[in-house]
Image 1 (cartoon, rainbow, N blue to C red):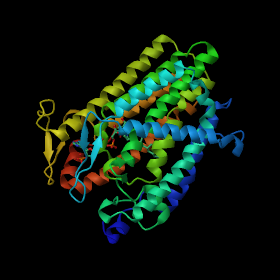
Image 2: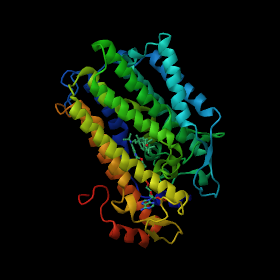
Image 3: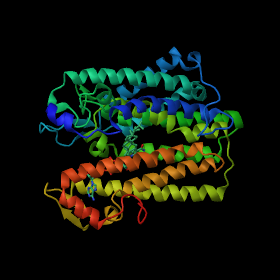
Image 4: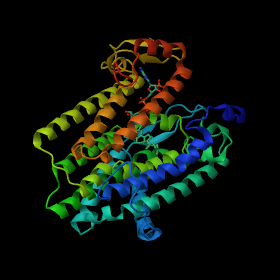
Length: 418
Ligand SMILES: NC(=O)C1=CN([C@@H]2O[C@H](COP(=O)(O)OP(=O)(O)OC[C@H]3O[C@@H](n4cnc5c(N)ncnc54)[C@H](OP(=O)(O)O)[C@@H]3O)[C@@H](O)[C@H]2O)C=CC1
Ligand SMILES: CC(C)CCC[C@@H](C)[C@H]1CC=C2C3=C(CC[C@@]21C)[C@@]1(C)CC[C@H](O)C(C)(C)[C@@H]1CC3
């Protein structure tokens, strides 16, 4: 990428001012949610009743625990993999190689945790450490992003991301300058996207479930549902790990504060909000309602998995019998666009499935509070914004063919609505 190309790339997230606000707002929101979940009124839209002092936020034990966790996940990443996958072709025509052993890491982590708990590891103490753990993770994310920024200063131009090289240091720090920063064959972005945060999220959920069992004799039905649904989501992400190699995060976005903080801090500490809420605010849930919520989750998962698998299979091998009969539009790049099947219903059927699942994760928390619905609200905003970014990129890539696709499939995420 030339410096001229870099400075002409469109600015996202409101440019330098927008990212300056996000640098403060994102961690502040995360701490607000952590505090609100444990407070009596549990209000999403009210200022916290008190601000924690440094003695409540800072704990060297939390930092140590975080580093032990990261070290464990690095060790599991480095274990022999059942498969090594190749990423998409890069600007310099090379392809990076990635180990496919995320699901193995999840299973081994579960076994180690089980072993630990059986010999007295106090997993139920984790909920009480969430605040200092989140603080240690936020500090680590800032420092790690600074190191990545410095590393990118000596990276070759071909290794830089299209978006995070504007020349404005704060903007580039947030978006990330280097596309695939690596140390030898260790890929930082790929590792962070799927391992410590996602697996950490389900461990936090499990710790909240165990703590609830300790407090009330047994975990509630609502807590079981939230744990089960989110474990399915994380298990699915790691089982289909290879498909993350074609997501916007891996092929387009640099690795900067947004993804570092998002992967390491935001995902485990805010995505576990429903389980946090349930620990402090138990909710009654009857069996008929629980079954209805399970049905909603199943519908969401069916759409999400069906759409993602259909596209991934089609991109890997368009003559695969499961996709060979689908209608397509040719593009000037030689690639084709699906216009029937899931991708003929709306232009982002996978987002629709994901949103339905998000609703099913919140419903077990009842309707008395808005707080557990934060994920649905945030995720809708994230996917609407992400969809707009993807449309821009597809328009650039496919030109008239993309316009034709938009005419044939007019709705973006929700049929006949949006
Ligand atoms: N839980 C969370 O916090 C988040 C979850 N997600 C989930 O991650 C998953 C991946 O999302 P994301 O990376 O945004 O993007 P998608 O998986 O939706 O991929 C978009 C790409 O798919 C290809 N494509 C688009 N339309 C067609 C078509 N009709 N036929 C064939 N190919 C098409 C294009 O790439 P090309 O043509 O180059 O192949 C396009 O750039 C989604 O399920 C999303 O819900 C995403 C963000 C956050
Ligand atoms: C902090 C900001 C508000 C933005 C941060 C965004 C990140 C949290 C998300 C960007 C894309 C993501 C994906 C997943 C998790 C959230 C982040 C990192 C994903 C790993 C979740 C599981 C899915 O099955 C997936 C398709 C593998 C997801 C890929 C994108």
